Image 1 (cartoon, one colour):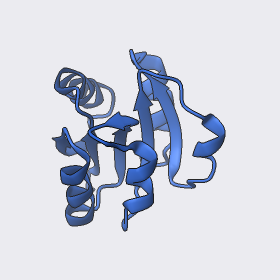
Image 2 (cartoon, rainbow, N blue to C red):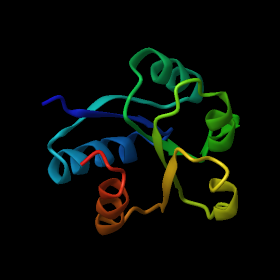
Image 3 (cartoon, rainbow, N blue to C red):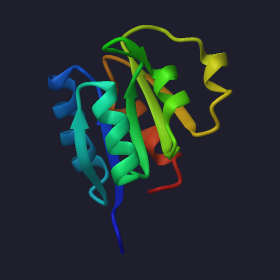
Image 4 (tube, rainbow, N blue to C red):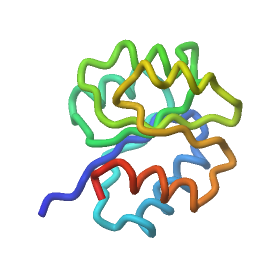
Length: 120
C-alpha cells in the first residue's frame, strides 16, 4: 500500500520539524515529501509532487494562505495553521481545506484534524 504524502509550507523551521516528527509518530503511514519555508517553493512542490495533504501556514513571506489556495492548480486536502486567529467562515469557500489548527499546536487537535482527512 502506498503511503499518503504531505507537504509542509511554513516559515517556522522549528515548527516544521516538530510537525514532521509528530506526524511520523501519530501517522506512520504518512510520508513527508518536503517542507518549504516560502510560498513560491511550496506552490512549485505542490504542482510537481501533488501531495495528498498540505499543512499551510496562514502568514508567510508576502502571500497569505488564502493567496496560496487561490494559486494552487492541484488542490490537495489542506490544513491551515497559524499563531493568529483567522476568519473561519472564509475557510468554507475552499472545499479542500479540511481544518484549521492554531499554534501552538495541540497533539490531540493535530490527530483529530488529520484523522478526519479520509487519508488515514
